[in-house]
Length: 280
Image (cartoon, rainbow, N blue to C red; front, top):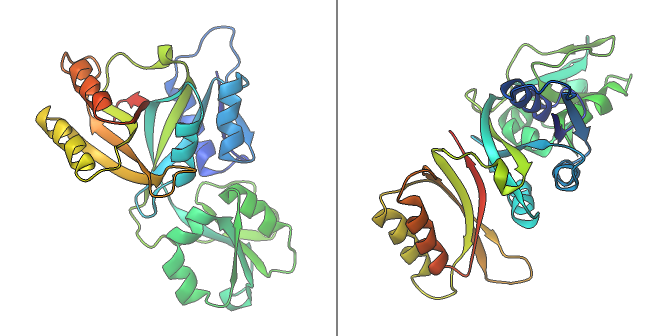
């Protein structure tokens, strides 16, 4: 199996991809590997084109909330579905040149999510450092280690290895909240990849643009005694004032009430798309 992820090696997405790979039953004769890509769009399109068998993407962080870009990509790309979930503990550390004080560091590189999750540390301890957003924490680490002056640092995971000589990793977790977790989804191509039994259903809907339409949708969910575990809204592209709702619900697709429940959802929405079926 080949699992795509946001690279390079050492990113949090790489850790999640490796965890998913370990969960998959190896097939004799198949080459198992994790394949790095420059961004989430390229990684997911590798699955759509058949270049990769699956993709590991972050969908939500316990501090920063949903990863909006990946919600949009799941919605836009055809025939891709989340089939597994993995929760990864996030432990952000500062990587910098040995012997350099925080006041001497002028630039901090990392992924935007990581910078946001460490905002309190950065504003209090490094208020004059410029924050430079990169495509992943691993890209930011490489960028910082290219600077021999000691003026650059990076926020990366505590798991990083093979640091360039002269660079060290801090012992302190920098996250604003120390109990910081990111939910990753394993995305595959084809409805035949969806599990037959689950306890989570992930789908999106567009409600009619009239008063009470969202309330009507929520009432259907309540009437079927389904526990809604997540509700997120995103603007519908090219339709100002229209919103798409991303919903995760505690739901077993093998349950006899699933088909009438989902049929009712479809009847009362303008658009409805299953994005994933998995176990929490």
